[in-house]
Image 1 (cartoon, one colour):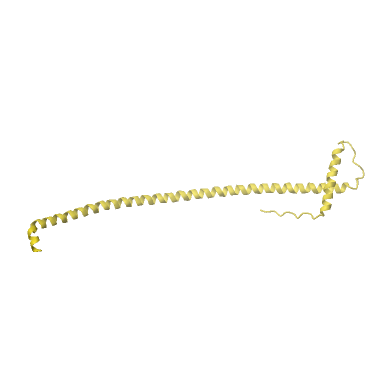
Image 2 (cartoon, rainbow, N blue to C red):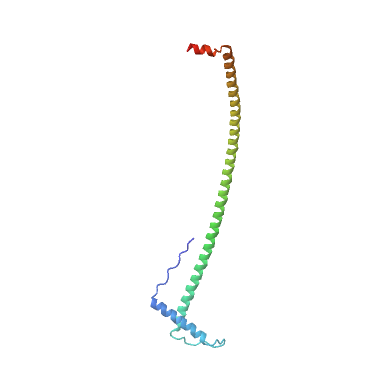
Amino acid sequence: MVEKVPAPVKADKDAQAKAEAEAKAAEAEKKKEPAVAAAPAPAAPSAGSPSAESAAGLLAMAQQMHDKHVADGEQQKEKIIAEAQIEASSLVNDAQDKSRKILGALEQQRSVLERKVEQLRGFERDYRSRLKAYIEGQLRDLDARGSVAAPEVGEAAAEV
């Protein structure tokens, strides 16, 4: 889900640069002054202080928004990666199941075809033996007829 990002505040670039420079100057002054816990706050703030505070506040708010968006982006990235890993795992499992089913079907077809090949080989053996017996029978019949009525070689040559 994509969240709408609030529109950035339109500001003059020079004013923004000036505010950033003032914020940096204010931070530098704070670092230079020794920190005294019991020191009373000045009664009247200087003229540059409100703009420095507003610039610092603006920068803090921008940093918070940035951090929030980065954190949201990281969460969304992790969510997308987790969903993608789940989907990838599901696809791999589906592919493996499909592969197993296809291989099982192919094995069944293979066994059926092997049985058919064996049947055909048996049929071939039977056919060859019957054909051989038939041809041998025909040859025996031919030999039996030929020896009874076989013309002599001399007579066959004389007739021609």
